[in-house]
Image 1 (cartoon, rainbow, N blue to C red):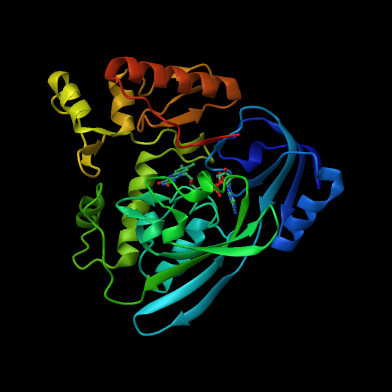
Image 2: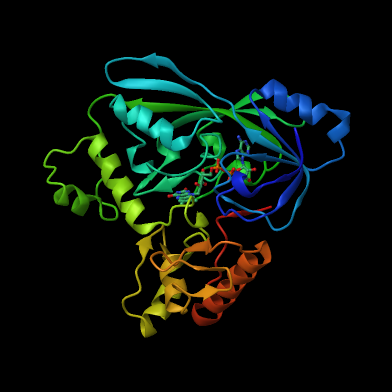
Length: 337
Ligand SMILES: Cc1cc2nc3c(=O)[nH]c(=O)nc-3n(C[C@H](O)[C@H](O)[C@H](O)COP(=O)(O)OP(=O)(O)OC[C@H]3O[C@@H](n4cnc5c(N)ncnc54)[C@H](O)[C@@H]3O)c2cc1C
């Protein structure tokens, strides 16, 4: 147990903020004991995985519980499929590598996403045309109101684009303890049509790609486009890509005929937030110790000693500018704490 602990190394933005108390937990029982300890009863509590999707807006006045639950278990398998139970504190990318090495397909496009397995269902992590909901069977969690261990089926998790029940109805009420996945052992459905995956495979002269090739391609693309949080603090995409009515798109097309967009359901389109930010003049712009990244406008970075207010003010300035220019309001993907 640490008191008045620096959170700098516990979140990828690397901003200097403090927690009144911080503890690393290795089992659901340990977490429950801290929740029920009278010494912490009145304090706010925060469950933290890898800290790669949070912006601390102030010192945390309560108890931060860092998830260290470990274990990967094969529950069942046949010639075609494998069913896994993965403890929530496992590192997501290490799990992807573990599966790729065994030729278990389904999450290779999600290579190199930082953070823990337990946080993955929170926002239904997605990249390069794949979301975790496509391979997730169920989520096990500790109900923080009565400390019962419960499970939710995929359908009950209410997954959407960067959304799940854990960000809404169950926000602050559930500690995700394990995630159950179903992966393919053969007949892999390779997803190569998103981003530059095909180009990367061609560049590497891969004619008959397997999941390991896809994983390598995704890693190479991500390394070339996204700043490494170990070198430049950031939390990945700061904003969600807005989903708007086609009429809004048509309005933008009158002045910006080349606006990129993707179908997002009946009468709806998704417009890349990075494009909106770039068109609003923020790409690569530095303000004090923070700024929008030069290669990926959607990523806000900490150039060293950024204060949380600087990042927050930059985010609000970007939101205001995009809204006044395009009439579209951006919403953060990052969780403000
Ligand atoms: C460079 C970079 C690239 C990224 N790329 C992507 C990407 O391509 N796609 C994508 O979807 N995301 C991406 N992200 C965002 C982030 O990596 C994911 O959202 C990841 O799942 C967060 O995991 P974490 O363990 O770090 O969560 P944290 O940041 O620690 O926590 C995030 C939220 O989940 C809650 N939480 C964490 N663990 C639990 C648990 N076990 N039970 C209950 N609540 C919990 C926390 O309280 C917090 O509200 C990126 C981030 C970075 C820094």
